[in-house]
Length: 127
Image (cartoon, rainbow, N blue to C red):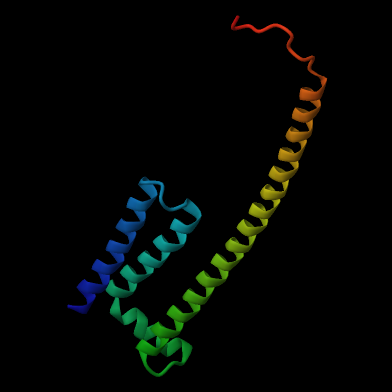
């Protein structure tokens, strides 16, 4: 029963990622990570002996401990990557805000120079 649930969870994760990709709500670089995770869940669920063999190879006592440790490492990696992306985005936003302020000041200066250089209208076009 647990094998079916694990495979179902992995396939549901992959399906959800594909739907988000088709709706353009998830970028491809993030989708690859989640598809790999989904495939890993499907493989571990379909071949339960694989986790036990990996546990013996690594030297961990209980397979669930290895699963939790791998999950924590994965979550730390995702958090680090998202923090890096956030830092890059904040830097881009700051740079764009500075460029916008400079452009706005230049436009205002040009507008003021243009208005001061334009001759005053002596005829009323509505009359």
